[in-house]
Structure formats: C-alpha cells, structure tokens
Length: 178
Image (cartoon, rainbow, N blue to C red; front, side, top):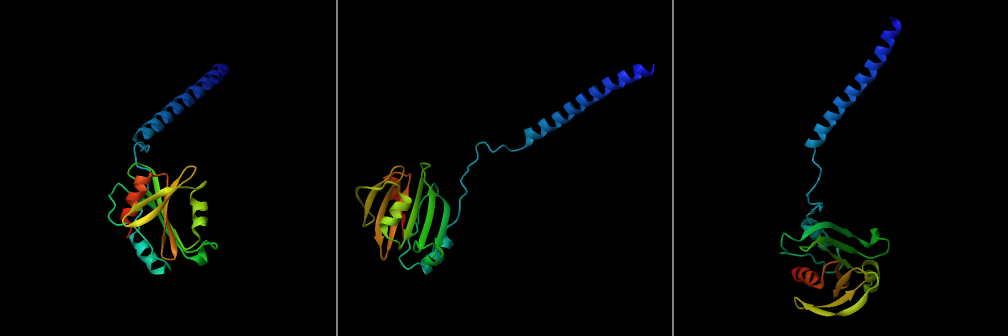
C-alpha cells in the first residue's frame, strides 16, 4: 500500500506541474493580448528647433539660417549648434535634420569650416551636378554615392542642404530658409 501511494504521488506531482504551467501560460497569453506592440506607430521623434535656432543665431559668427513656413509634413528630428571650441577643430557648426514629406532625410549643415571639408563629411563621393537658383540665391548641386546636396556661401560660412531627399525637396527647404 505504501508503494502504491508513492507512485500515485509522483503522477499527481507531474499532473499538478503541467496544470500550473498551463495556468501561467494562459495568464501570460492574456497579458500579451493587452500590451501595445508598436505596430503602425510613427517612429520619428519630432523635436522643436525654434529656441535652439534663436540661440544659435546669437552665437554663430555667420548668418545662421533656419526654415520658416515649412508644412507640418516636414518633421524636424535633430537639432544642434556646436561652437568651434567644442567641435574638434571643425568650426562653428549648425545642424538641423528633417524627415521630408516623401519620407527621405534632409539636413541643414552650416559651418565656417572649409566647404570641401563639409562636403567630404556629409556627401561621400561628392561630384558637381550643375546649379540651381532658389529664392534669389545660387546653389551648387552636388551628387554623392547615396546623398545629394545644395551648397552656397552665406557670409563667412557655408550652407549645405544635404540628405537622401530629392533636389526638389532640398530646393523647397532652401526656399524656406531665413
């Protein structure tokens, strides 16, 4: 009789363990159904840039440009100003990045570093690709391996509009610069 109760207890233990695992699995499954999974959300973290632009305009030794009047479809996702003393010898640098209405990337890169150094940093394999006239300013077009750019002198600095965006979207960004 003692041997029978030991065998029965072993089967009950395994059965209880399986039932416990099923109960825990069911609770986890219910929890999974109610947790957000991130499908369909916009991964772009939009940042405000007006305050940073105003501060950078006071600090920059060249006429700093920032867009005004772009549609809400242009979503700013990065902004920074680095004075030359904090920029590893690369000059005073203004950066403002956007996701364009077509989902491409466009950025304003302004610096008092040499133009060729900016192109080498932001447009790998840069080759001249003509010129564009936008908002009364002449812009040189540059095509790289993956990116393209519009570039112009602005006072003692160089303005580079660059990214994977089309020349048309870069021209729209240039049109909005003030």
